[in-house]
Amino acid sequence: MPDKQTLERAQEDAREGKAPSTQAGEFVKEEMDHIREGKHGAASTKQAIAIGLSKARRAGVKLPPPKSGTTSAATRRKAASDTRKGKSPAKKTSAKRSRATTNALKREPRSAASRSALSKQAKTSARQRGSAARKQAAKKAARTRQRSSR
Image (cartoon, rainbow, N blue to C red):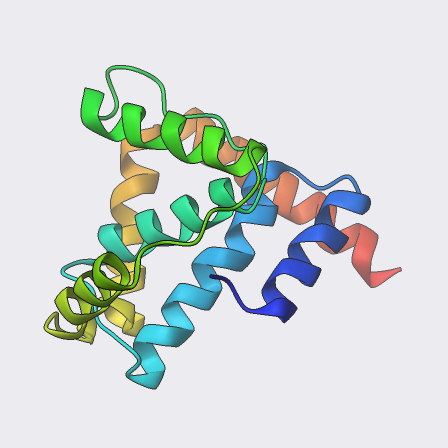
């Protein structure tokens, strides 16, 4: 279950009309904080991000499942399942399952949320997107900076 502040920040983003990926970013950030605090670990940065996105979908963020060709069918099924769960009223996870998940994550290393690991992950995903997409993102960032500095 996400923290109350995370839910509030995501809802504020939604009210401001920000993109679903921005709203979901709050949940990913929370996950990284949990790993840094030592609450649990993650096998990789990718897994940590996936946990955050899953929480976001279950919290009702309208984040579409990934496109086919980019991820496995199992990942898309999980994303679709999370979206359905987000639309229906929340049912409490059984204590046994919850404990098993937490214990499994506690055995994982904490390095997935390190600065270098996040940097490496960002660079890898940017490289996959291609130069045109990177250029577009840079332009948008520049526009956003201009707007916020006024």
